[in-house]
Image 1: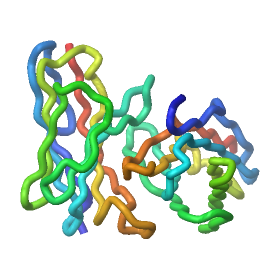
Image 2 (image 1 turned 45 degrees about the vertical axis):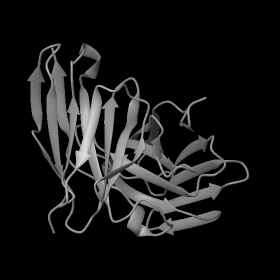
Image 3 (image 1 turned 90 degrees about the vertical axis):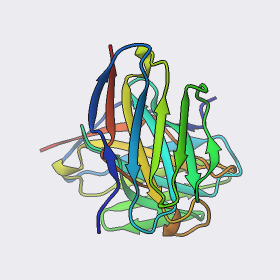
Image 4 (image 1 turned 180 degrees about the vertical axis):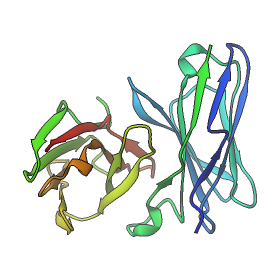
Length: 117
Length: 110
């Protein structure tokens, strides 16, 4: 079974540009979460989507946005890029987001490494 | 106060020894707890999940949860060089958001 697929894997942008990252979850998974990982801050939660609805949002500025499509694929967008946005952006999927079973366990993709110059 | 704290610095353990990692969390409403392993340059992968107080064993790994004291721990028995990685504690809070600690680097010395 295919895992979580993220594209592109690497990209370089300049300050002020915008970027769109894509995530295809594991087949059947309806919950998609996005995280930003940096050496200084670790893994920080961006947002979670379930059945095309944003269910949770982290403490990031409005420049960070996302959406989920009917096939559960998700995209995140960062507008007006800043140097500090350079990071590894990780997408993770799960069957559900709640409950106390393996259904809420996140499986991560390989990530999209963004460098802002 | 950060939601999930992993305060220990890098941990060096001899091959075959026990590695012990600790994690504390701030939200008393948290119900689901996870340990992820992340190799350098790779994405996190789940190694343990635990939902109720007590111990949970899976092979060489044992997770321990104490909700009253708000801590989770991970023991790695018979440590192997392949266990060298960063271990991330993750806690799902009362709002169903999964928060991660900054991680503990483990180095197993042959």
